[in-house]
Amino acid sequence: MSTQTVATRSTTFKIGWIALLMISALVALNHILHVLGLGPPDEAPLYIGWAAFNLYSSAVLYIPFRRGERWAWYVTWIQVVGFAGLIFFNAEVGPYYLGTAVVMALCLLLLRPAFFQGGSGV
Picture 1 (cartoon, rainbow, N blue to C red):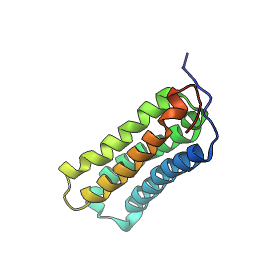
Picture 2 (picture 1 turned 90 degrees about the vertical axis):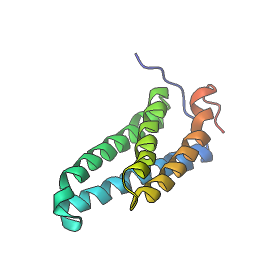
Picture 3 (picture 1 turned 120 degrees about the horizontal axis):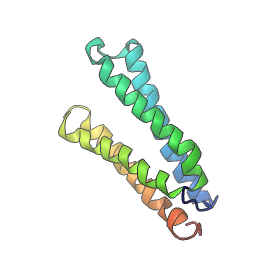
Picture 4 (picture 1 turned 180 degrees about the vertical axis):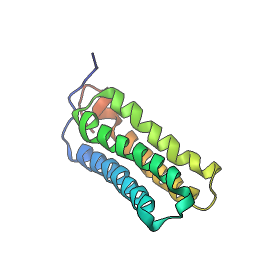
């Protein structure tokens, strides 16, 4: 049984949720395009993994996160940590992913009251 709160449909919630969803979906699309030939062929398995990771994150954001399920708020931090962690492994693209992680973290912190204060919104 999952713990579910009623996520307030305030303008702040909608903007934060849409920003998170768009970032996740656009990054997934970017990785899919790299698999289809826009990236180096020897890195295709890496891009397939990242595309799957981001598609899953998009699905979590689209359904349970929008419903206001608390576990979805916690799970979304996995994507933020994954993006931020790239700074340690790839100096070329790491800063871009770190910037994306910062934006996602700010969105999540902005949306926190909708999940943890009885759905009172921001």
